[in-house]
Every structure is written in C-alpha cells, then in structure tokens.
Image (cartoon, rainbow, N blue to C red; front, side, top):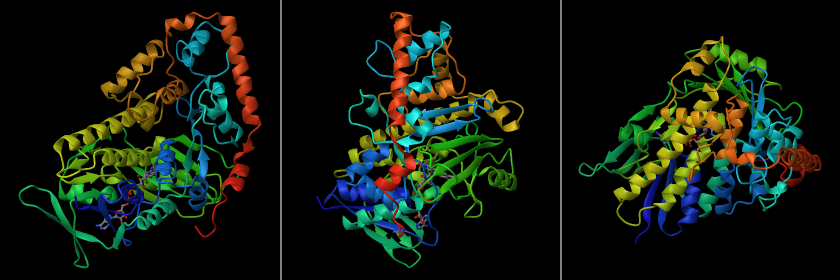
Length: 501
Ligand SMILES: Cc1cc2nc3c(=O)[nH]c(=O)nc-3n(C[C@H](O)[C@H](O)[C@H](O)COP(=O)(O)OP(=O)(O)OC[C@H]3O[C@@H](n4cnc5c(N)ncnc54)[C@H](O)[C@@H]3O)c2cc1C
C-alpha cells in the first residue's frame, strides 16, 4: 500500500506529539505533513503531567535526562491539595500505592477498620512512599520491583510547555515529517462522502491528505468548524472557564510535586521548574472578574513575577465524537478538562495510542472509528467525574463559588461512586483508563468523604499485629525517604537544564 498521507493541523504539544509518534512507530506506513501558524502560536501552558508520559517517551526512544534537561523539567510525585475540604486542610494525591499489596483486601481497608475501632493509627499518607518523599522534598528513581517500598511509587514531570513541542519536532523531522508554516484559511470537503480532501493556506497552497488530525487547539478548525461536530458543554459541573497565568522566580525549595491551592472562585496551580515556578489561577468568570483574579494571584505567588498576568479562556467539555469522517481530533481541538489533575497531555497521549492501534490499513472502517470514540469517551467521562469530585466533596461554605459546587447536582456516575465509598470504602475498579484506586482514595479521604464501614474481610487479622505492622511500615518509609537526595540536588546531578534550550 502506498504511504497514507496524514495531514496534522497544528504544531502545539498535540501536533508534535502526534507527528513524532506516527513517524517513529509507523515508519513507511504514512507520510506526515504538519501545518502550523507562527502568527497564531500555541497555547503555551501545560506544565504538569501524569506518569503515563514516561511510556510515551520511552516508545519514542527519548533519553530521560536529555529530555528533562532540554525542557528544564523537574520530577513530580503527585499533587498537593490545600484548602479544598476545609480551609487549612492539606493532602497529597500521590503517584503510587498506599501500603503494600498482597493482602486479602486493599490496604486502606485494614486502616479504615482500625480507625473505625478507635485505634491510634498514623494518617494514610504515611503509608505512601510518594507522599512521604514529596513532603520531605526528596527524590530517587524507583526500582523496578513494585513489591518493594523503593519501587512502590511512580513519577511524572513538570516541564516548560513551550520547549516540549520543539523537542518532539526534532524527532519527527528526523523521522521524515514535513512541516509547512502558514495559516489555513479554508477546508475542502468531498461533496459525496463528506470527507476532508484538503486544506488551503493563505499563501494559496493546497495540501491534500487521506487522514487529517486536528490539533488546532481551542479553535477546532476541522472537527468543530469544518465538520461542525457538536460540543458537549460540561460547565454546569466544572464552571471554571478562565485562567490567569503568571510565572515567577522560585523561592525556597524546588518541590517534587504540583501545588493546587483552593481560591475563592476556583484554585491556583504552583509548578516548580528548574528555571522558574509556573503559577496560574483557574476561576469561574460567573464568580469573579479577570482583574480580581489577577490581583488575587499576584498577592498569592511566593516569588518575584517574571511576566505580566496573561488571561486564557476555555470551556469544559468535549466534541461529541473525536473521530468523524477522515478527521481525528487530538488535544484541545477535541475537548478540554481543566488542569486540576494535569490530564490534558495524558488525553493527547490516549488519543495517539488509540489512533496507532486503530490506524487505517486501507479504507477507514466505521468499526475502528467507533472503537476510537468509545475509548476517548471513556477517558473523558472518568476524568470529568474525578475532577467534579474535588469541587463537590467540600465543607467550604459562605463563598458563592464553593456554595454552588458543594450543592450542585452531580452526574449519576459520580453519585454512585461516592455512595459506594461512603458505605464501606469501596472504590469502583477500572479495566482501562486513568486514575486507579489510590487516586480516588486520596481525594475521598483528603476531602473528608469518610466511609461508614469497611470490607468485613479486613476484620480477620488481630488488631495488635496490624498496628505493629503499620507502625513498622511508616517508620521504614520515612527512613528510606530520609536517605534519599534532596530533589533540587538530584536534578542538578541528573539533568541540569540546558541554558540554550
Ligand atoms: C490554563 C491552562 C493550563 C493547562 N495546564 C495543563 C497542565 O498542567 N497539564 C496538561 O497536561 N495540560 C495542561 N493544559 C492543556 C495543554 O496546554 C494542552 O493540552 C496542550 O498544550 C495541547 O494544546 P494543543 O496542541 O491542542 O493546542 P495549541 O497549543 O493551541 O496548538 C494549536 C496549534 O494549531 C495551530 N493553528 C490554529 N489555527 C490554525 C490555522 N488557522 N492555521 C494554521 N495553524 C493553526 C496553532 O498555530 C498551533 O500550532 C492547560 C491548558 C490551559 C488552558
């Protein structure tokens, strides 16, 4: 079969991730042509990731230390949430497990049982390697054995979003991807099939393709505009629709975690990189103004600002289908869920993985297309519920924004999950997708969703032996973390940033 002509519209993180993956993993099967407009530019935020990105980089043959140096990256062991359940509350959503596996029931069930029996046991996060390392500002790469404490955590990266695309561009171009700079002004469709035939540029150039990947960002040039795929608006559950971003110099420790601090009309992020700290306030414009949000952020950031506040607008939700005719939407062109759990780049990766698995070997099959859309729906719906949980499970009262999210009607799918957890700490298990048990447990307990009971099988062991085992475990975890290097020192040794990046 002749190489299939794939046209990628957009050269942001989504565009270059797609180009690098297709050229590297389908060599000879497709010819990749990416179009981007320097005048329009990229969204340029998106600094925190999930551990899955490591598998993506590995498949592309990316050497970790080189990539981290080039993107001025730091390690991320999880997210620290402050002031969410109540003002003054703090918890970490870690990458990794709570306690060891291998018991008759999940570790948190034994812990719940002891708590419910009035026993003095340490907080659950004392049984997480990632939480303990994060709190102590320590880092070491995990070992490959997940049954050992030193292998019981995962990690992701925090990097400069403007440097990731160019890094991938080098890989894609080395593998044969072609790039054209210019603004697309028209899209030609086949009158019969409805398929996209070509895009036309301001310069007059016409670029034809068999498969189009829409990575054009919020404008959704192909999927939203040309193909008019409807947008499912989820703002009634996720009312934040703006962000004001403002980087600053790093003050104090370079923490190996992302900060998510609740604010009067949303929350603000704090993301330490090697050369600066990213900050932004995600807020709902129905509850505050741009000026007030910028003012609140300016007052809250810890270091000296190195740029003026920049406002971005968005809407929570997604296109009803991500693959329509011969066009696949990837990245912001297919949907957006706010960055509370750093999921956008993960969603790009999930779409690319599904596209690789279902890449057309001839004519596009409706069965493959439906399967792609099913997988993407699943990812979006699960993440949506997980994000809503953060807002809804709160005792904060007295500010209009928090009163709204605390009392709003939530999707049935989330209401059922919450009920199950409240009854006896049961977490709905997934076979596919992101955010497994430990993530849900961290947020439930961190935001004061306390179960009434526990799994009865947790009653079998004697309380004394459980308590002794737990004490030893938390002491071991603390000892291992204390023996690790300071995070900033680790970065300086392992992947010092490139000045010319
Ligand atoms: C406030 C905020 C914070 C975020 N934080 C995170 C985070 O912490 N973690 C995370 O994973 N994600 C985060 N994201 C999401 C992340 O930024 C995006 O998922 C990521 O940057 C991908 O963007 P994109 O490539 O889809 O779009 P863009 O970066 O917008 O790229 C669009 C591309 O399309 C091109 N284009 C558009 N129109 C045309 C045209 N007519 N002709 C030619 N080219 C065109 C542009 O030039 C550009 O190259 C955040 C997003 C926002 C808004």
